[in-house]
Amino acid sequence: MPRRLSSRCNKGTLDSSLHCVHWWLPRLLPRTPLSRLSPRERANFLLTNRIPRRCATLFMGWFSRLRNPLVRHVSIAVWELFAGDLRLHEARKARFASMHDCFIRELKPGARPVAVDPGVLISPCDGVIGAFGAVRGTEVFQTKGLPYTLAELLGDNALAARYRDGVFVTLRLKTNMYHRFHAPEAGNLREVRYLAGDTWNVNPIAVKCIERLYCRNARAVLELHLYGSPHRVALVPVGAILVASIVVHGLDMPLDLHYHGRARLPCPRHYERGGEMGYFQQGSTIIVLAGPGFALVPDLREGVVVRMGQPLLVKPRTG
Figure 1 (spheres, rainbow, N blue to C red):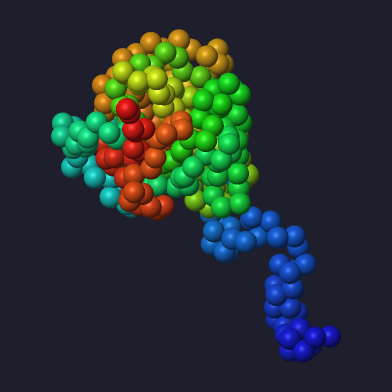
Figure 2 (figure 1 turned 180 degrees about the vertical axis):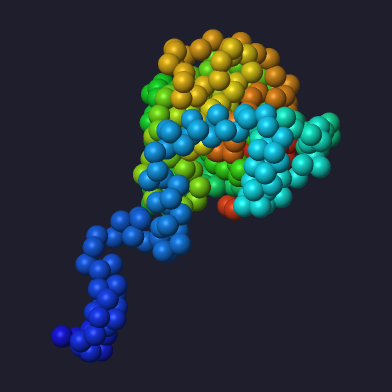
C-alpha cells in the first residue's frame, strides 16, 4: 500500500475509513465536468437542476403574478436579499403590483444612454460577459472545452452559414438585472424563430457542466437586417429554469412552456438603435451573433458587467 494511502487508511477507525474513501473515490471515478466542481458548486448545480424544472418554472410563473401586497413585499425583499441590489431607483415606477411586475420593470428615460458612434453595435441588454470571441467555422464555445455549433443553436444550417467565421458574445442577465432587450442597431425584424426545449439553469456552474447547454434550452432567434447595409445581426434569447418565457413585441403571445404553435412566426418590425424588442420574465442569457468583418470592442472582458447601450461590436469598415 502506498505510504500516502497507508497514512490515511491504516488506523482501523471509522473516521479514517471514511477519510480514505473520500480521498480515493474522486480518483477512481471518471473525471466528468460535475466531478471537477467544488462541493458548494456541486450542491448548487444539483439543487437548481435536479428538481422538476418544468414544474418549478410553471409554479414561479404563477406565484410571481400574485397581486397580494404581503406576498409582493416579502417576495421582492427575499429576492433582493439573495440576488443583490435590484437598482429599483432606476425603475420608471416606484410601486409594483406583483413580483412579476418588478421582474419586467421599465427604466426611467435616460437610465441607459445609447452610444452614438455609428461604427459600433451596442449591447442589447444589461448582462455579465460570458464566452465571446471568433466563430471558428460555425463552432463557438459556451466555456473552455465545451463547444457547440451554430446549426444546433439556431436550428437551421443556412442561417448558421451566414455567421460562419463571424463573432459572438454571450450575455448573462442575472436575476437582479434589467430584463428587457433592445435592438443593437437600427434595422428590420422579419420573423421570430422559436425552438422549444428544456429549462436548465444557465448560471456559470451549469455552463461548466452541461454540454451544448444553450442548444438544449428553449430559445428564440431574432435576426435583424441592418439599415443601409447587407449585414445582419442575430440575437438568441435563451430561456432557463424559472424563466422559460420570452416576450417579443409584435407577437400576440409569449414564447413559453405553454406555447405549441408554429416554429417560425412572422413579426415585421422596424427598430431604431436601442429600441425595445422584448423581455424575459426573469434573468437569463442572450447570445449575440454577427458575421465576418465584425470585431469585438477592444476592452471586452469575461465577467465584466455591460449595460444596454454600451458599445459591444465594431462594424466592418466600408470603402
